[in-house]
Amino acid sequence: MFEKKLFKILIFTSAFALLGILTIMYFFEASLVSISFLLSEDAKVGVYLVSGNLKNIEIKSNVLFFELCDSYDCISGVYFNPTNKTAERLEYAREANQEITIKSRFEYYYGSPEIIAYKFYFDKCGGYS
Amino acid sequence: MIFIEIFLGVFLGFLLGVIPCFHLNVLAYLLLFLGAFSIITNSFYFFFSLAISMTISGIMPLLFFNVSTIDNYSLNLGQPNCQNPSLYISGFLFGSLFAVFLLPLFYLLFLFFSNFFVFIFLVLLFVLAYFVLSDSNKLLAFVIVLFSGVLGIITLKYNFFFSEPLLPCIFGLFALPTLVFSIFDNTEERCDSKSVQEIMSFKSAIFSSFLGSLFSSVIAIIPSLSPGMSQVFPATFSERLSKNSRKVLLSSTLISVILIYFFMAAIFKKSRLGFVSVLLEKGLVPSFSFPDILLLCFVFVFAVSLSCILLYFSYPLISKFISLLPKKQPFFV
Image 1 (tube, chains in turn purple, orange):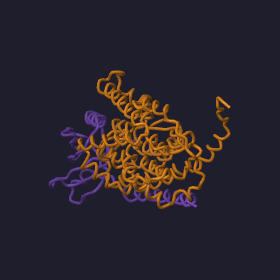
Image 2 (cartoon, rainbow over the protein chains, first blue to last red):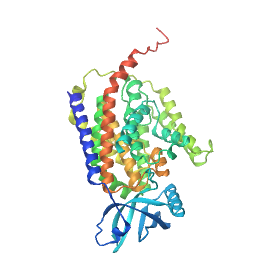
Image 3 (cartoon, rainbow over the protein chains, first blue to last red):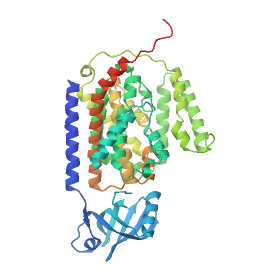
Image 4 (cartoon, one colour):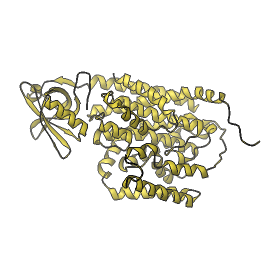
């Protein structure tokens, strides 16, 4: 009796979790925006994918500060608790002037626009840190 | 892409977990040695699912051969032929659900208590004292604690035996005391013949799973505490836990800590497990936004249920296969 009930719960839980994954992938997929859009008045606080080249990388108190620029604008960003490997890859990307994509949260810090980086995509194959 | 990662992780983890005493940390060091992390660069959910599945199928050696590990040796779970996977499956399943609901609690605990080193020291001392005092042979237990403590200090602090700290991690400082323990341990248990329904109700399975998930939060605060050791707390507070409840408790704790390990790595970049440390060092654990945390929870529950379904179906098959193997003959008649 217990075992039969358990198997039903197992099936139900896996179906529910699958539905949850699909829902999140459908509704919470970050949209790709330009830096100019984030700096415009239309930009709302949220999670976005943004591409550009890195400038002015600096690590202070375990926080990595950087600037992400495209042809027109730059936006400042932070990344908390970077590992050595991530810092190295970002430094390499800055030196090589490589375009990277960042999944980040856009918000206003004391009135100025800023991105808090979650994930760095270094290539189109999806390598991230 | 995420589903390929999950399915691959679950199947590979399930196969690897069946190998007795093959711990996640050993796998991480092997992958490190083989340079696998430079090839697999974008696969957080693969490693996450692999860790979940390996933990769940890691119960197989215990079910079939009663192979003890640091997580279950103190629990006295019974002889191989007394084992039933349903209890462990219910522990894994309900434990995973409770772990997801208790995630805000784990977050707050780590945020407020992780820097209280005196508190951490006292908890470790309490756990150690509990193990020594609850053992039938207190003198032997004390000698083992003393011996492993000395061995630990001269190995890790003064680097006396090995030039590389990786080696003691792989071979395990606790291997020798465990061997000594197993030499003197000759407990024989009577097998329970009642069905699972008669022995354990649905309600008590839920209660034990909740206790397991709740007290696994201790691991979030205290470094170097294993899932097995964390079960000292519910065992102390609830002395009347039956052997079956302890099985549910064990599996619930084992699975809850996996979510805590990965959650802490993603949010605080901290790790309590060698496997997660290696992933962090290799930049395989990204930072998480709120939707990412939700996704992590759903992937966790999905991978747990998939692995439990695999365990549910593979157990009778493996059991049948093992029963066909020739039995070991005793030396005397």
